[in-house]
Image 1 (cartoon, each protein chain N blue to C red):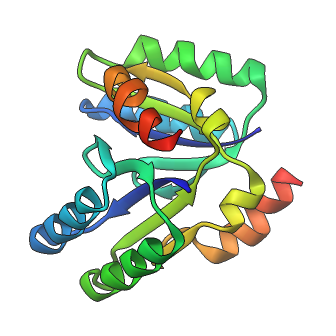
Image 2 (cartoon, rainbow over the protein chains, first blue to last red; image 1 turned 180 degrees about the vertical axis):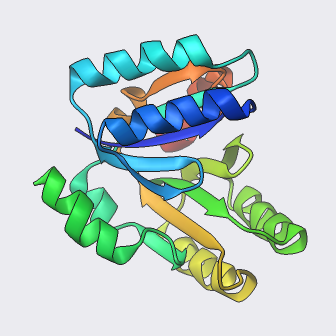
Length: 95
Length: 95
């Protein structure tokens, strides 16, 4: 599924580990703490377990499924998603 | 529509103005720079124009439509969306 992953992780070390894990899963970083990409159910379970092991009491991480049509309908102000990234990298992965 | 608004705004003043605008629209702050709620098409156009007037060259703001089913299927690690908020405040607005 296509998913948006957003986190708020206070410790640099934990944040880096989670970011690396998301990049390893093939997600694309669209903003400092926002990633987007396709992730299958098993990998998602694994990610949630990994995040649980890294986050402290005040940290948060969400994985929000998004529909491709909804993403296409997203409104962006500023640089937003790098358009090249979205069209080329993510969407070709999603298809 | 139900939408997720995520921003990355460097200037405190502009960030506060955009945050206040989002709260005025009835969105709920789920994380420091993440808001969730229902917003109609006209209000959304207005928000995009307002954001464009506030953001500087490196800032970003996305409005991503999300389906209610997708939000229900979201995985959360840590405090995430305040559960009470999601069930009571947002979902009753969405229904």
